[in-house]
Amino acid sequence: MIIERAYIKSNREVANNIWEMHFEAPQIASEYSGSGQFINILVMNAWNHPLRRPMSIASVVKGNISIIYKIFGEVTQLLSEKKVGDEAELMGPLGNTFSNWKNGTYPILVGGGVGLAPILNLKNECDTHHVKYDIIIGARSGDEHFMDHEPEKNIILSTDDGTIGVKGTVMVPLEKMAKENENPYLFACGPEPMLEAVRNFALSNHIPAQLAVESYMGCGVGLCQGCVIHRQNGEIGRHSYHEKYSLVCLDGPIYEAKDIHFG
Ligand SMILES: Cc1cc2nc3c(=O)[nH]c(=O)nc-3n(C[C@H](O)[C@H](O)[C@H](O)COP(=O)(O)OP(=O)(O)OC[C@H]3O[C@@H](n4cnc5c(N)ncnc54)[C@H](O)[C@@H]3O)c2cc1C
Image (tube, rainbow, N blue to C red; front, side):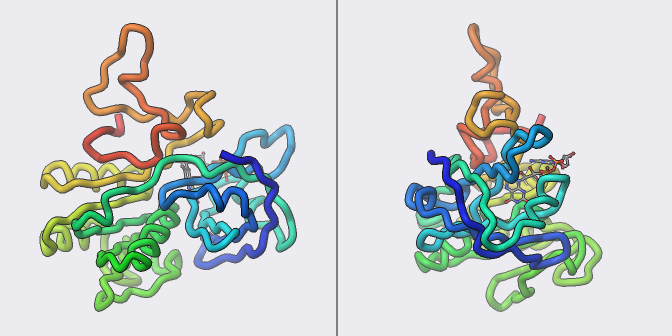
């Protein structure tokens, strides 16, 4: 894990309220080990924003790292106002990676809301390794999408209001695709209700699934204990709570669906 001052190489709005940013961060890029990992960004060094903001890595090309982010609050708003040539302090790469997508299973990638970055990163890794997959990206409305709905290429968009692609949540195409393909393995990132729906579907249909969990995070390095998630069947141990809870920053953010629950 490295702390590096990184130049911002681009920062643009790619869909309604969704931004893509590229950093020149050769040291962190050299330690990167795969999709699922994230960086922790100190957007400004000010008393009112002392905490870094975690963002999944969307791509690593040579020494450059990209993120895809949604403006949620003050710091992501400030991030969107950064200009090319500005700097930000990055900590990373942090966290574990998606696994088992090259092992002869059929990956079905599911991204929703802010959970696009690690899923698009995994899609690119599948392309690089000639692994066939389906990908489903969900949003509330068509203006939040920046990809095209291309069912012939197994790229499915869904919208809650039906303005693009399949009408409804990602679960509509997911349930169909999981039944149509042999040996499916689900990989999902998105808001908690979406992850919970994917988890419930996977467990009740005995389909393996990995979830990238984006819990609210303080320090990103295991000190504040703020990002905990429930371990499945966890019990409180004699000396600690570590059997009951897992720290997303250190143990995650990728979990097998069967190993966690959302409380
Ligand atoms: C491992 C990890 C990876 C992430 N990757 C991405 C990414 O690729 N793209 C992206 O857009 N965001 C990602 N996030 C979420 C992102 O870190 C938060 O949206 C960001 O910190 C919000 O900062 P803010 O100051 O703008 O908003 P704040 O003022 O801190 O928050 C505004 C509101 O947003 C909600 N919120 C903020 N963070 C979260 C969260 N993590 N989970 C649920 N609700 C939250 C809270 O309700 C809060 O009131 C990731 C989070 C984690 C833990």
